[in-house]
Image (spheres, rainbow, N blue to C red):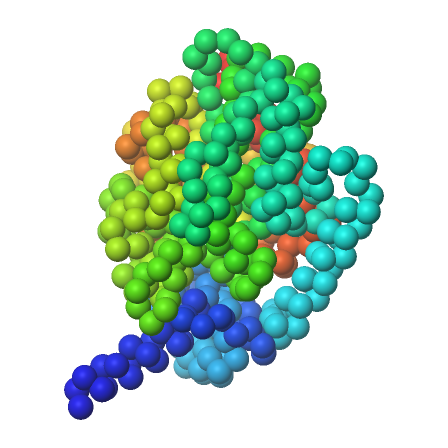
Length: 424
Ligand SMILES: [Zn+2]
């Protein structure tokens, strides 16, 4: 009897989880925005976040900062009742996520179709007016390697859990042991604008090389998507898939949060041991082959990498370590200075505002992130996690029309960083 009860509880947990065993059903799901107006609200919301019952599109981080929570249809009344009971005001910002997701898919498919029709390049279909699939991105990287073979090298650094290539592009005009800026994106599958932005910056710097004089002194490494299985899955099956796609062995729940999987204070805080959770840290540090592959590249170039940038979406935050503790690194002032310079350049372009700060002073502590590892283990001084556009109006469904503006303004920040590395 006891066993049966336990099984029922576990099955219930798995089914209620945002990334449960079956595909997440978003029909009638809602996104609810709450505004914690006092510390007790914040504390309560963080507790709710750690329970894995809902998909938090933005994490609770400070009094007065909105938190957007996605609840599946059958959980909507439960969430609303819970919030009312605690006295936290809420508003429904997406009344039917299924409907909105379908519309957004139609819009992106149309944009892809138009991009294909406009395209005159026989070698690839890539552009930045739509969110492209992995094949388009990889064809484009191969095209760059072929067309700009004197400055570009594209390497497959390994394969993903499901056997997809993991491609890395190195941009260098020669020279010996130049400093490197390493940029990755797409660690969280559903954050499409991250992959699009990294590939946009890569494209601009390769195809208009002469506009970036710092490239005489600095090499760049780009990995636009370091979670290719998740990325594809978010296109084909579940738009809100965040994790990798590895088998974790419990009720068919799949995947690990790749940004909780790095071996530095692993699993200490802000993570989950429930394999069905969206913030599952994995059975052990570096359990995910994709993160092993990226780690190996960071290790390989560690003594030359001056800046590590890892792009996420959304919230418009420019964050530096530590993520696992409220303490700051000894040299945090240096990191803060460069972050503010980068953000000033970004904001000057379209007026988009960003918050700058250490991860734990900007969001709640979470251990196992790639930026913490890059600084704490690989010894890279300047490591940043950047949450791109927007602040929640569209969230993960940022319209394709915003890819280029996001890319342009973010490129300004990267230019500031490139010039800084070149002159130091
Ligand atoms: Zn993310």
